[in-house]
Length: 120
Image (cartoon, rainbow, N blue to C red; front, side):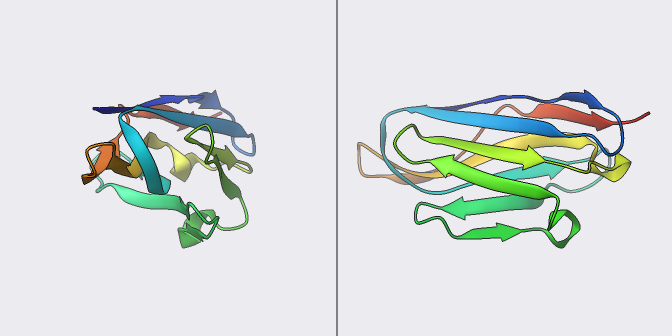
Protein backbone atom coordinates (compact mmCIF):
# COMPACT_ATOMS: atom_id res chain seq x y z
CA UNK A 1 0.00 0.00 0.00
CA UNK A 2 0.97 3.61 -0.59
CA UNK A 3 -0.02 6.56 1.55
CA UNK A 4 0.16 10.26 0.76
CA UNK A 5 0.09 12.66 3.71
CA UNK A 6 -0.38 16.38 3.13
CA UNK A 7 0.34 19.31 5.41
CA UNK A 8 0.44 23.08 5.29
CA UNK A 9 -3.07 24.26 4.51
CA UNK A 10 -4.86 26.98 6.42
CA UNK A 11 -6.33 30.44 6.35
CA UNK A 12 -4.44 33.29 4.72
CA UNK A 13 -5.26 36.82 3.64
CA UNK A 14 -5.32 37.79 -0.05
CA UNK A 15 -1.80 38.43 -1.25
CA UNK A 16 -0.34 36.07 1.32
CA UNK A 17 1.59 32.84 0.93
CA UNK A 18 1.23 29.22 1.95
CA UNK A 19 3.39 26.18 1.46
CA UNK A 20 1.84 22.74 0.99
CA UNK A 21 3.86 19.58 1.46
CA UNK A 22 3.09 15.95 0.68
CA UNK A 23 5.03 12.86 1.64
CA UNK A 24 4.52 9.49 0.00
CA UNK A 25 5.33 6.30 1.87
CA UNK A 26 4.73 2.57 1.66
CA UNK A 27 5.46 0.01 -1.03
CA UNK A 28 7.06 2.43 -3.47
CA UNK A 29 9.46 1.34 -6.18
CA UNK A 30 9.40 4.63 -8.04
CA UNK A 31 7.18 7.63 -8.59
CA UNK A 32 6.64 9.06 -12.06
CA UNK A 33 4.45 12.13 -11.69
CA UNK A 34 3.56 13.96 -8.50
CA UNK A 35 1.23 16.90 -8.35
CA UNK A 36 -1.50 18.93 -6.77
CA UNK A 37 -5.15 19.18 -7.67
CA UNK A 38 -7.81 21.30 -6.05
CA UNK A 39 -11.55 21.28 -5.72
CA UNK A 40 -13.63 24.27 -4.78
CA UNK A 41 -17.23 23.95 -3.58
CA UNK A 42 -19.58 22.93 -6.38
CA UNK A 43 -16.72 22.75 -8.86
CA UNK A 44 -14.86 19.87 -10.45
CA UNK A 45 -11.41 18.85 -9.30
CA UNK A 46 -8.77 20.59 -11.40
CA UNK A 47 -5.04 20.27 -11.93
CA UNK A 48 -2.99 22.94 -10.20
CA UNK A 49 0.55 21.77 -10.94
CA UNK A 50 2.43 18.59 -11.70
CA UNK A 51 6.08 17.57 -11.84
CA UNK A 52 7.78 14.53 -13.32
CA UNK A 53 10.65 12.62 -11.79
CA UNK A 54 12.90 14.44 -14.24
CA UNK A 55 11.73 17.82 -13.03
CA UNK A 56 9.44 18.84 -15.89
CA UNK A 57 6.54 20.93 -14.65
CA UNK A 58 3.07 21.96 -15.79
CA UNK A 59 0.86 24.59 -14.22
CA UNK A 60 -2.72 25.66 -14.58
CA UNK A 61 -2.90 29.02 -16.34
CA UNK A 62 -4.60 30.52 -13.29
CA UNK A 63 -1.56 29.89 -11.05
CA UNK A 64 1.35 30.46 -13.42
CA UNK A 65 3.81 32.94 -11.98
CA UNK A 66 2.35 32.62 -8.48
CA UNK A 67 2.76 28.94 -7.57
CA UNK A 68 5.90 26.82 -7.72
CA UNK A 69 6.00 23.04 -7.51
CA UNK A 70 9.10 21.09 -6.49
CA UNK A 71 9.94 17.58 -5.39
CA UNK A 72 12.59 15.55 -3.63
CA UNK A 73 12.85 12.21 -5.40
CA UNK A 74 14.98 10.68 -2.65
CA UNK A 75 12.39 11.51 0.00
CA UNK A 76 9.29 10.99 -2.17
CA UNK A 77 7.99 14.42 -1.30
CA UNK A 78 6.37 17.18 -3.31
CA UNK A 79 5.90 20.80 -2.29
CA UNK A 80 3.69 23.58 -3.60
CA UNK A 81 4.76 27.12 -2.78
CA UNK A 82 1.77 29.41 -3.24
CA UNK A 83 2.35 33.16 -3.37
CA UNK A 84 0.08 36.10 -4.11
CA UNK A 85 -2.92 34.06 -3.11
CA UNK A 86 -6.35 35.12 -4.26
CA UNK A 87 -9.81 34.33 -2.87
CA UNK A 88 -10.43 32.18 -5.95
CA UNK A 89 -7.60 29.90 -4.82
CA UNK A 90 -9.80 28.78 -1.95
CA UNK A 91 -10.30 25.02 -2.26
CA UNK A 92 -9.38 21.65 -0.87
CA UNK A 93 -5.97 20.77 -2.27
CA UNK A 94 -5.13 17.14 -2.98
CA UNK A 95 -1.71 15.61 -3.45
CA UNK A 96 -1.40 13.10 -6.27
CA UNK A 97 1.22 10.54 -7.23
CA UNK A 98 1.54 8.02 -10.02
CA UNK A 99 3.40 5.20 -8.31
CA UNK A 100 5.11 2.04 -9.46
CA UNK A 101 4.82 -0.21 -6.41
CA UNK A 102 7.26 -2.86 -5.29
CA UNK A 103 4.80 -5.35 -6.78
CA UNK A 104 5.51 -3.64 -10.11
CA UNK A 105 2.00 -2.34 -10.42
CA UNK A 106 1.38 1.26 -11.45
CA UNK A 107 -1.50 3.08 -9.80
CA UNK A 108 -2.65 6.59 -8.97
CA UNK A 109 -2.76 7.59 -5.31
CA UNK A 110 -4.33 10.58 -3.59
CA UNK A 111 -3.89 12.33 -0.30
CA UNK A 112 -6.77 13.09 2.04
CA UNK A 113 -6.87 16.76 1.08
CA UNK A 114 -5.97 19.94 2.91
CA UNK A 115 -8.13 23.06 3.07
CA UNK A 116 -6.76 26.36 1.78
CA UNK A 117 -8.88 29.41 2.49
CA UNK A 118 -7.95 32.84 1.18
CA UNK A 119 -10.03 35.51 2.86
CA UNK A 120 -9.71 38.83 4.61
